[in-house]
Image 1 (cartoon, rainbow, N blue to C red):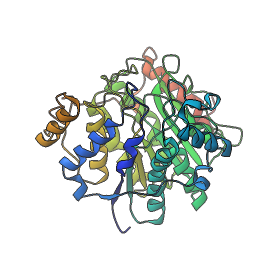
Image 2 (cartoon, one colour; image 1 turned 135 degrees about the vertical axis):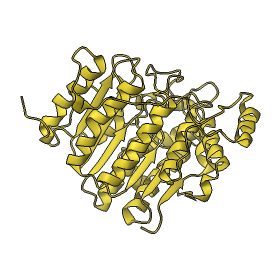
Image 3 (tube, rainbow, N blue to C red; image 1 turned 90 degrees about the vertical axis):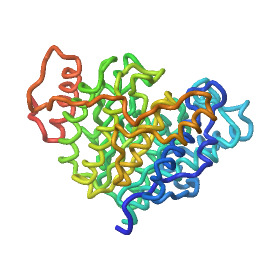
Image 4 (cartoon, one colour; image 1 turned 30 degrees about the vertical axis):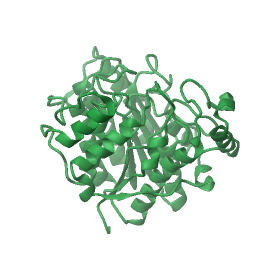
Length: 391
């Protein structure tokens, strides 16, 4: 490896803007990058701006007619094709939408190309993780599914086993759909139960197509799940699957919308639990994938208090320069936050919690809703992977 980590960043990604009042405010990206710089992390991780993904790369996942519809909507947003999910309240069309969406996808694709070539071990694209986009439709604020495109590019380059772990509060439905019947890709999504939340999918019994049984893994957690339950669920499912699958590359999605301050969902995680999961992903990449790790952003709508801090932790951990949770946020960054938002930024890189969890090997409580969710997932998937008996 010629380097340890790269941060894929182009200021142009902040043009991914659905307009005033939309929850996916690109300010969250700007605030994150400024916090990364305020901590001096850009001196310890190579910052690279990649080219936009071209049509041949986008078509690894998306249909040609959909790309054409996105291009048309980019010129005439008022006439977007709502049958393809464009110009809807969730995913409004906007000028140059194709160009900036392709730019975001390009950062994720270049990141995995760098990893696969051996130029770096880790790459981060916190503007990515747009996991809801489908082959022929935009969905849930997502135009092009950069995570799926990056994985498809790895397969095109010759990868035989790629693991995708989605820690967003919403089900990673678009990535699951892209590789539903492909045994080369293991998709694992830990999310709020679909009966409470968009997109309404991600139940344990969704476990892969006929050619790939057990390749889709869904942990659907009850609303209100907090630090200890969420971390218990993640650790009760993910490590065993990665050890069995032996991925050549680990791709992780770190949507920040699991946080208790997020306005669009109902899990109650702290920043500290989210950070603990990032550390675990880093460890799993080294333990199971020879360090090959692409870390993406995703959802997250507490754009001042939460998103910049957790994604800065992602960058710091990937750079092997972790920031201690008790560290104060730099004064210069808080001043920038106030200038941009007229809000006071958070004072520290922690919510003041010390998350812990009980390992699955210690036994489960059949009356506990989180344990019921974990057990449902293990029963649905583990036998197909040879990790549990059929009965």
